[in-house]
Length: 105
Image (cartoon, rainbow, N blue to C red; front, side, top):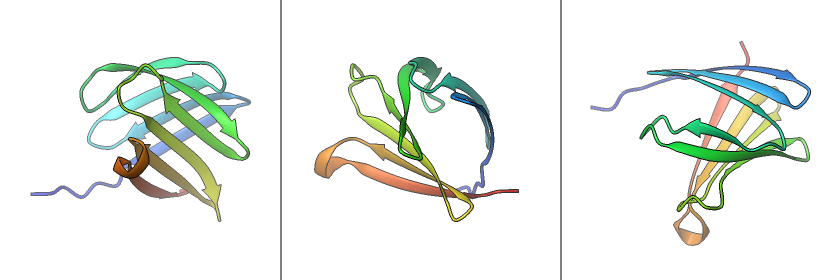
């Protein structure tokens, strides 16, 4: 049986310093500074991973460490007042892409 879930993001920004709280079945708290690598625990398997957030124009792009066996990239951007989060897992023709759109409350 599938579960329908509408996660809630709370994002605060002070310059290049971000705090993102994701509330869903579990709550995750992520803190990082753009341009500096940080380590976070993968919520699916509780394994630590290293990420590098960077600006890509007006988009916030976060990629996992190049030493990680699978490429993961998350791009967050504001489009027409909504936060659009696009996650790519893998590369080339085997990549899986998902897009999640958040409305501001």
